[in-house]
Length: 252
Image 1 (spheres, rainbow, N blue to C red):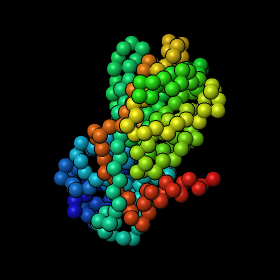
Image 2: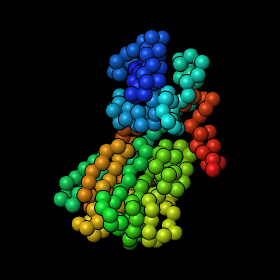
Image 3: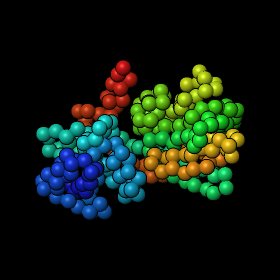
Image 4: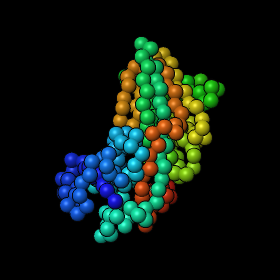
């Protein structure tokens, strides 16, 4: 069992990486059987983006502030924890965007794609689902589409629904909606095709972000769930991600 360890800049994470490398050795990412990010959720997401093409499982160890997608280190041997771990498949969103100058952008997101206003003026956004207009005009700070894996991140902060990992559902959530004020979003099938069109985009410019990649002055965004770049993420069998998601729904 070969590991490739990488850590955040957190001193405790660096020290943990050093100890684990001393015990298990360090292999190149190409030769390793497992990729072990040590830090927080942000490091895991960056690792998924960097190494998804290698088709290797990820086992994150938590040394971040929240670490919802990470595992807490224990006295058990790392090899035993990984052998008994539960597998979850993270299926990303594929985002394609068109700027006001007709530039085309593409990116993948394992957590969410968010469209946000760039100026003091609220954004005005038309929303289509499967080529049908479902909202002619959403006046808001922004709107996001979240995967089930990302539903406890920005989506939850925007009062979106928490989704079980195996739900095959996407969460469409407004960010500070002004009109319609009472609209709380929608739950969509994973096979849905979503389009955001920025209205009055010259005066009400907006940017789109796919996880940690941002593009500005956007006119239109198309999003769909993708079978490309899927990743396997491992979770300690005694503290599964399913239990974390369930428990999060009862936290106040």
